[in-house]
Length: 575
Image (cartoon, rainbow, N blue to C red; front, side, top):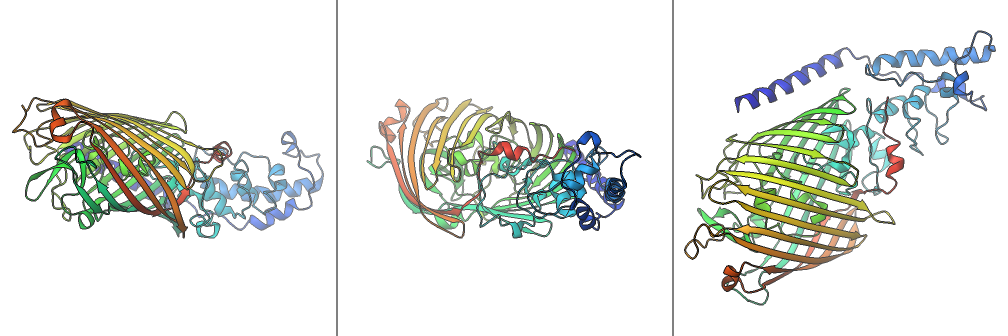
């Protein structure tokens, strides 16, 4: 543990110090050459070929004059670029003759942005510098709504639209904690630029009637009118030439809107209520604060980043993005039955993570608190830092996000404090846009989770998908999970060595009924059919069925998975 803390602190201080020294010696940007440089291009009707861009002594005087006026801007801008930046090696004649869709730009700005193909904007030299992203940023523009991405509000500071832990990855890749989504994943939320800061907000609020075991086939069902919810705010900004700072807060009012027992869900288990009683056939409410975190990333070059993440609470690198943040589960208000086998560590009171990205690969390691949150949802639990995890992530294409991870959790359940768990997960997330653009896409997730250690070795698996067709969605989830008598509070009826196989199939549909201020109001319904282990049928019934109807309020589409990604890839500035 001491080694991990020493590494985190040394890394953070070292990077901050290096950044401060770099900023101290970096001269301010030059803006004065913008108009004079462009004026030189006005009388030119044709552009000299690249091979003739540098005039010889025998060339006419006008070309010499153009060269002399273009040179100072390039010379003054040169110290600003990183050591590996080759953006200054351009043809002066081509620079002065270049035009950007009828808008005036400085020659230096055009050199930095001429491959971007970013049409219809007036950009100053400073703006182009932010657009360049030092030395590159793969900006996934996608389908943006006019409400949250107005040009005036954004000030064309595309540098603020990067991933939360890399200046060279698209924002769409953001998952929960430090996890990755596919780049083609749509985003829902509100976004605003305030000076150097990019602010984002997203979340969901449901009003739901939920009935488990509709036909009363067993004795474990229940009915409830409730309102699951979560809200998340994030702020990030670039720090100097290579740094990226990010803060995040996630909250939930679950206990206020659902009570301390959470909501009914057949075969669900995990955590406690009412002074140490097991939660069985119910999903626990989330804590008031699910995340308060800070992260800092330092770009080594366009292909490599190192970063640190600290949360109290926060999410260590175990499993895929948590179910509330997976778009494949976007329309399903229920927690997966395998939640405590796959992604339940998303609320951890004390987590310190360090990571390294190389191109489309990422490796992370974390020291965190293994104990799951206690039943007091409004307090801050003790930070123990007694558990460890590691995760390898790989995004082979814009449509796929793959990960494998393992966590060594110390005493995760307060009701069984002597049992440790080794949790292993693997997942493949897939996203792609549908023809027609806008809010039309297909997303899916395949997840496996395994809890070892203690007396049992239990598996779980999920295959879920969401087909969003603008206002209408069709979605589904298949689950397989193994439960023990202890988890289902049946130790008085079964031997503790028993393991029960449970299957569940959920199908649902939703329809957007209103849209205002980039906010969606959606109505939906879903049903789940369970296939319990034969030993459990006397209690649950042969094939119990559950159903629910709901209204959901959530931010609208902020950034979609654009089919025009080929053109957006052209905006990856490589200098």
